[in-house]
Length: 296
Image 1: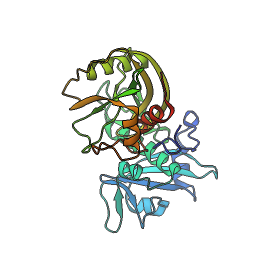
Image 2: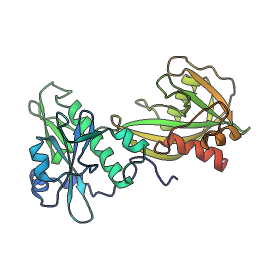
Image 3: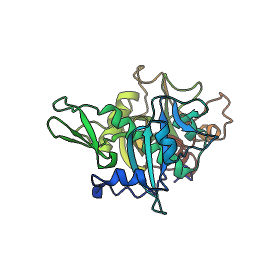
């Protein structure tokens, strides 16, 4: 699979099961601790550097301190949320950092993990069982209700994303109303409760494009911290050809010949059609089909 798949590289040792009440305090006090700070507009950077020391983190008043893990040098990496972007610091949105290939893969993966967890903290201030306020535990890897004692864990929402192809060398791509001008991509949708991944691929393809799908093959997955999903990439074989798209989730859906897709990958399609950037798993699903002649 790809040399660069966004948010997929992260070698921190998380050790979530062995965290104690003192783990966060020990990490915060570590002299080599590294901090990443998330403002409403994006990750803070000083002179282009996205890493801060403890003194800077304390000065900026971060909250929701969460230990991502320990690096190979035994130094902790911690993320915190700040309420505003201070003067003199730049806020850099994660999607822009990733799509522009502006940071090393390891740092990109850590920021993705951090944004996912901080999004979860922000959305889990109160217990979904009784409504009581929650507090963070396990160095940010768990929250507990102060009223009913219910434990809440970070959630990851599975999303099926599929490159549907037929036996005639064509693939199915759609265009959502929110896409940048000229861009087409794979179909995708959340895996629903009580549903297998394969069933989700078939259902979403039928719902969005009216196409029946047979064989489904898993290819790769990608963490997607917007706000907290796991994109599960599949190749799927179409059993029908007539497209009937819903007009709500998609504003366009069509078959593309392999030669067309290769032209899109090389940014030379005569209609100016483009594909997702290489940081997105959709790009690599499409490339696997176009260059490798992949079948389900």
